[in-house]
Image (cartoon, rainbow, N blue to C red):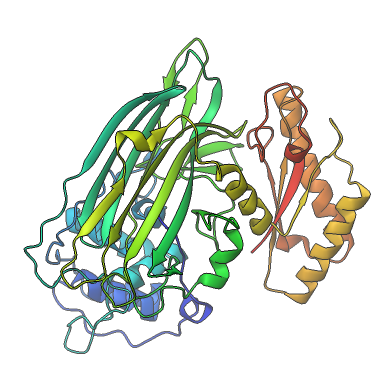
Length: 476
């Protein structure tokens, strides 16, 4: 999902109630979205209930709709839940609403029902300019600046279908407009070679403008606005980083997220899938899509580019199965078109770039306040160095009362899966109990347990790996 960022600031999250304007007969999407941003859920509910109005479709943007973005998830779940992750960018959200205007009504109803979604709230703020008193949209500093000549053509999409050593890679890269493009990737493991309970993706990103690096959530005037948030995840040599939403995602995977209730990986949204492979049997595809944008293109800051490497990965072994490089660039000129990069046959490879492992390791170093690893096989007892690390966590939590800690326990691929499921939970609970014993309120501590389904480092089934026998502590 995108060169990703959640940009809701504390003051936006706690915006005071505002006066609710009289509702027009058929309010525009941007008007309702602006009201939600400024006045909150209660104001939206009052706004709608006062008029019984439905949303009219705004003028359709010249953007291709993300396929399947408005589909319901399994079990009839609201299509709005997880929408921000699925569309991935302001351009993606606008394209989705242009393709399915009825979805806008569902968004408003979702917020009016009292649901909170900081990521969607932030994305709406970027996708729709504030509404002025006369109903016109004010300029938005984060809005993509397309060529001044509307006749500049978009480049042709790039499609591929390539057999790799461990599976079949299919992809499409197509421009959305002259500042944004959409990638769809499908990887199906080779069931004659691959045994995998869960297959998803990891994705690295490098975003540049001129000689400077840019970051998700940046603006046309300040592309490096969120440098302090993202720079800790950058691999030292390549400057690549794992593409994820720093504030709200606890894993490095693109298309999969952990369901603690069910104790298994699930797809992040309705338009993606987690794959699998039974060696000697059947395999299913892992799929993902991304719609990044370059809001700082053609702003006099230098040529802009964004580069991705999307890697299919077995989640329980961390084994990479295949990789695809793709991206796009825009020259710093008024009528410069978007230029697609990568996504050619040669860009789909059996193995990821040489810096893949170091970039993933940098993610783990930056994401977690501490990782308590090398638990004894079959044991959940905390070691002296684990307690020393947890003492540092205690200090941080006491100094910052707003922080919470998520404690994620894991096992390696030795032993029985059912035993490992219980063992990973006991390890996380041991860390929680230690923190509670040091005066931390249990209400600030969340326990997750991954069994042997989430490997930090690559490992083979049946072989001991101390870095995978761990508890990772995420402060957020």
